[in-house]
Image (cartoon, rainbow, N blue to C red; front, side, top):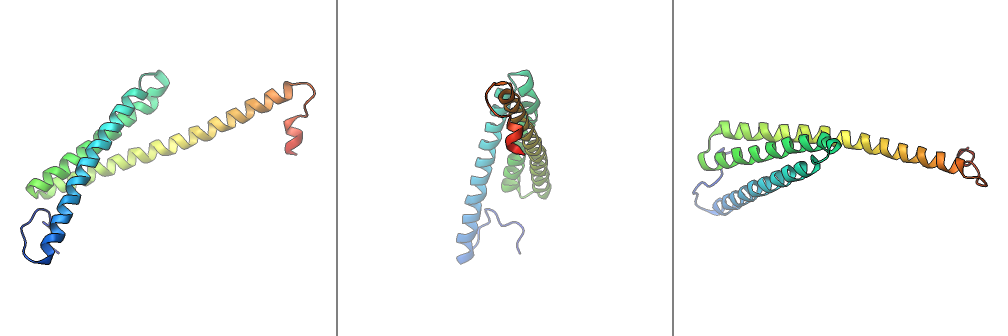
Length: 139
């Protein structure tokens, strides 16, 4: 397989496939830059509160990694430099690693939030006279 398949002039039916791949590659770079910038802006807005900064600052790093990856992919597209391609995949791997950690933390916090809300409402219902205890309903 030809390793430098992007933007190569070629004759025959494979040429149209290569130009399609080149177009998809360019669109992917554009989308990565947009998503990266959106995540950076979202992280900055989330960081406006002290508690939000715990999530917002890592989001900013995630967005920066995505944009770095897009820049490396664009460099590879223009120069066919293999180190740029390796750097692009490395930056993208860092993006996914940080995003995975943030997703796991968010899920844990969400579960904790639901447990806290359930506990609060259980306490509240137990304080209202005339209603059965919610703990009796669960047994």
